[in-house]
Length: 248
Image (cartoon, rainbow, N blue to C red; front, side):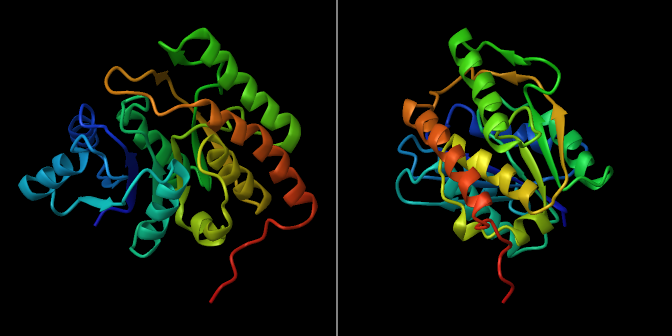
């Protein structure tokens, strides 16, 4: 049984999904994979099912949801799925190779070997490590993280990063039902909540490569949610509303 689960949300990723799965399974370190597909009309889920049936029944899993419900809700679904099982390390990862599978063991090691609670695959820990992004998008992402740090005092340079490893205890402590945001702001909210609850966060420098296949899911509403969501997060902390999940 693997101690680590990689969660990959998908929507129309037929060009990438098989390759990313095989790349992860080719690593020396054993990871399980949970794909959460939001009703992709391009047949992404069918490809995953075929891989499960043909080769990976014991380590590849699929959860299908009806309709496009948002990145944040996909990860919350995956976190709860993982917590119902015996995984000790749960990792967020994109399907499109913008996150390099060979960096997975480095994120895992930061938590497993170095004792951190959250490991962030950071584009900005050592400068700007982004390949093939338009300059406008690089600047928007970079200064968005600067803005988050200014408002929240969160000491993480890449607050919107979507390549993150969590120790199980972090996800057990955060009240996942109170996580409100769906896009970039979801990533900020998870890191900020972990920080407020006293967990140790490490940034692991990675190189982010723009997708080569398929279509980006980015839109302007994601940035709007992040801009106003950060202010909301700060006020929630000031008012003492970010609290651990009540144990049942």
